[in-house]
Image (cartoon, rainbow, N blue to C red; front, top):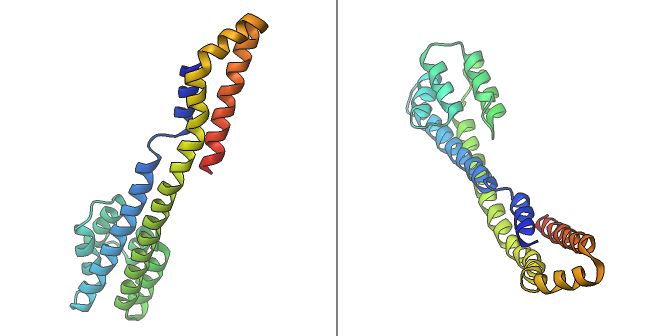
Length: 191
C-alpha cells in the first residue's frame, strides 16, 4: 500500500514543472536586456537593424537568435518584425514599434526602453509568484504527508485487521480508498 501511495503522490507532483517556470522567467530577463540594448544602440546612433543585430548577439534564446539572423541577413523590416512578434513577453509591441520606426522614422528607442522596463516588471512579478507558490507548497506537503505517514506507520496493523475481519477484498479496497484519499488531499492542497 505504501508503494502505491508513493507512486500516486509522485505522479501528482509533476516533476520538472519548476524548471519550466524558471525558463520562462529567464526569457523575461533576456527580453529586458535585449530591449535595453536596442535602446542603447539606437541612442548611440546605430540604425534599427544594426541595434537589433548587436543586441541579439549577446543572447542565446532561440527567438533572439532568429532576430539576429534576420537583421544581419538584410531581411525586410516586416520579416524582422514578424520574428520579433514571436517573443513571449512584449513581442507584439516591439514588432509594432519596429514597423513604425521603419516607415515613418519615428523614435522607437524610447519604446524599446519602456519595453525593457515592462519585461523587468514581468520578471519581478514572476519571481514573487514563484516565492509565494513555494510558501504555499509547505502546507500541501504537511496536509498530504500526514495521511501518508498515518498509512505508512499504522497501515500494516490496519491491513491485518481488515484481512482477518473482512477478507482480502476489503483490505485491497480499503488500501485503494486510502491511496485515492491521500492523492485527492494532495491535489486539492496544491491548487
